[in-house]
Length: 445
Image 1 (cartoon, rainbow, N blue to C red):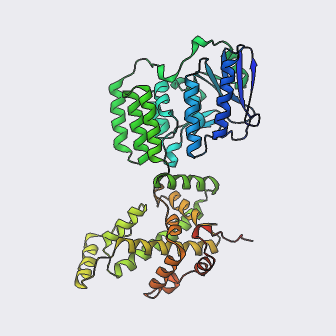
Image 2 (image 1 turned 45 degrees about the horizontal axis):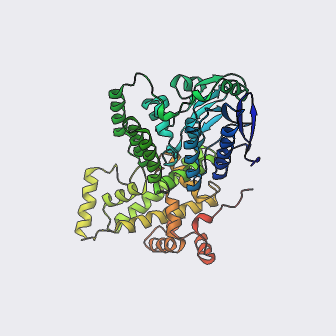
Image 3 (image 1 turned 135 degrees about the vertical axis):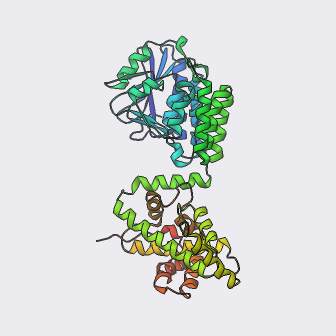
């Protein structure tokens, strides 16, 4: 237990200190350890209030994305809220995600001003907050603040957070010592759960109008669920609102949009932001899409069908979006004159994915990127691809080397062999039965 958290009582305050730096991730085990120490503090007759804090690190980055950790955090937040002694949390550094949800469940929040910030960025990985954070944030700080934090991922420093009602006190110096002093003044009569808290001067008409305005602007699955949860916090009883939050998270968890956005976030966190490399890779891949689209049209596909596929895949621009009406009509007339049969959309997509994957292998040979997944990240950075869609290299991996190589061979026979000839790596992948995503570029001298 000590390697996760420890407990001691000081001046009537039961202090729970998390001891898993630098991340203090809220795993199932960490949540269960905190839960047990809260029970110990409640049973401690010398303890009038409880303080949760960390030592020598930021508070926590959040929780692992698995169902067991989510369920454990939900149980912990509900336990804290219903505890018979006031619970204070000392916040230092950047407090995000599940850690911020834990803080919102506490009765009081004290925040260190130097380097301090609270934020909810779950929406950036295609998820609503997991453990009732929306319901509690709306009750503590209101609809406007909840929308700014949960939809726009706005971070709040200590002073703005205090002004917004997100935290209850701030300090310039060491927050752990200050929070002990803060908590020592509390008694069991000072319990203040979010569900029983009522903000003053709420303008329900203005809140409703703002929610409708934001609804019209944001259409992503996670964003829609978050907005509905914020609206529910204004309309439903607290317990029903919590269930709505839980349902919203589960409606998005492990869905393609969330998988895609989480994958991009992981890749973006480790890939340096080099504008020249981004432009090079995105430009080459854009050219590959155009070449694939052109050959599809030459074989009978309608320009509208090609663009339908590219947009459905997640590309911001189609191949023929800017084609003039006159040029489009000429292509259509030529196809009708040939009595060309409509090309299945799946065939067009396979051709595009094969062209992209082959070009990625060449870019890896040149040292521009180190793995296929980096290509997806750079396409998003270049604003060529919507991060809410599974990336083209993810699609290449699920399609498989054999199907992609066969498609490249078919297209190479039709022209542009320098572009369409399969990269030698396809033969290696097929021979060794390895997935496309397994490829790593050789280190450059």
